[in-house]
Image (cartoon, rainbow, N blue to C red; front, side, top):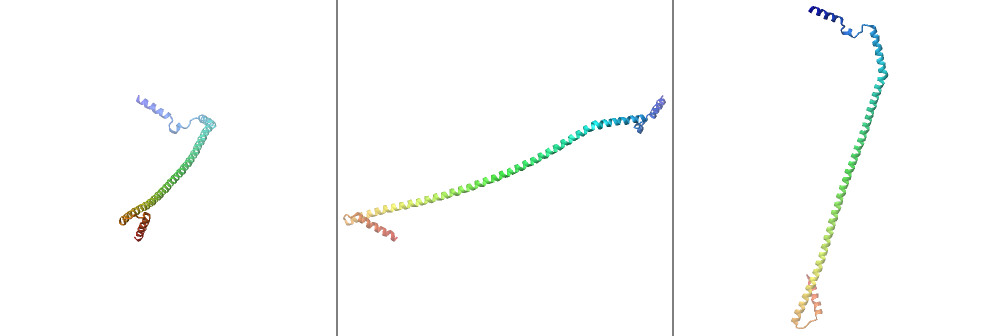
Length: 184
């Protein structure tokens, strides 16, 4: 029985084509039918599927070109905005530097003005103080002269024992004091 099965398997293996025999048709009718089927499928694909596929590819290509154009435009706009922002920043920095320079100049001018005013105020105070001192010296000198003259007249009256003319005697004493002041 084993031999019977082995011979059947061997016979089946011999009757089945293998390798290249499987690809090549054995009957010419099969070749014509295959060519007609291939031509029909090729025509249907060429007439309906190829234009749809080409349209799909063209649409996709147009979309990609449009996206590239939009991206380039966006890049250009972004570069313009960046350049604008940089120029505005440079302008703002220049404006800030100008404001700082103006503030420094204003502060320097204010300081110089305040120093000048303080110096002029100090000079005015000094002049007023010197004037006040001179006036006070003159008053004190006049008061001392008056007292010296009065004392001299009183002493002279007591020494002489007679009342003297006060105005005449005062002129004599003032003249004497003036001569003493000149000789110094």
